[in-house]
Image (cartoon, rainbow, N blue to C red; front, side, top):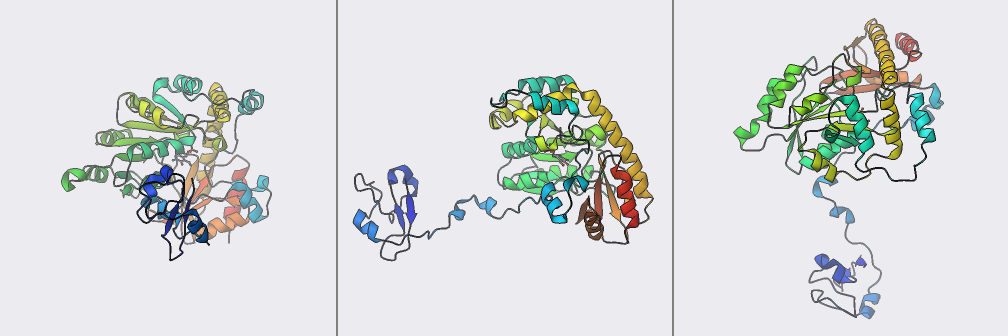
Length: 428
Ligand SMILES: Cc1ncc(COP(=O)(O)O)c(C=O)c1O
């Protein structure tokens, strides 16, 4: 089947070949060129000879106009520059860069994970779409039934799945900025709307404002937000959501998505077991941070029983690849080593906090995660970020509502700490 569009003034505008296959596109002004079996709706008909004479054919219609309307104006997600690209841009070898801008784990995968990846023999076989072995291992580690766990291509995929499953144009999502950007991005992909309830000055979630907002549907005759994204510890502020706040928010008529990407670094337990008692709670976790395999893309959701069949139907069958599965299983078999790495990162975080607090133009916020957010006082945070970058140290900078003139520094390894503090102290 071929469809051509032409702008020869003497002929109809749309030329359709094999129009039976694309009857939807056939209009009264679209001629059928199928001499053998012209379709009734393709009047007026002209012969193949007439058609061949009607050259040159060009595209008079912009195929981009076929996109869904809400997709056309979408702002792209702007990721940080890939590591290798940045190393080329700075003219520095990757191993000389201190990458403290994306909250990765500087120690990388456990040795046992690298061994498991090296020796696994079945990369030519598709993964198990039900992910049973991984779900069983996660269940044993988390203490929740395997039937409530959905492994995904990073926690990001779980956020995307939830948005696609619940949202359509005109639905609403409640977001608490400043926070992780993917909630807003994935909501926009569905043409749905974000209702922002900004965090308070100390980055605590404004529970009373959310309660007012989550019930606005009753007053305005419109629907309440379907999803409410919460993050504990929050990125980029590093603070926890207290139990009492979560309990209050769980009483709202929304699905509460609690993102615990950084919970392993917190002095507080995961709320994964809460899913057993709360049918409107989903908890997100990841292997990208504490487990050090961000590049392999493995996360998971702990979901209420009614949601699991929908997610299993909705997800791509092979959403988690075999390498991620092998790495995830090996990580879970060596959870004591992960815990030791987490302790090292937490110890370095304490020393990093003290070092940052001693710099008079920085005001670090206490953090339960593997990064520290700092207000930059009396100088431009963007300049600080650029100056560090020129010295091979990559940090994240922010200047937007709720995050004015800030930098966020991921906790690196023990060797990175004195280098970072030296360069910060030496900045003019
Ligand atoms: C709060 C939060 N959730 C989720 C993610 C993404 O996790 P994953 O790498 O598993 O997709 C990140 C990544 O930085 C994050 O900060």
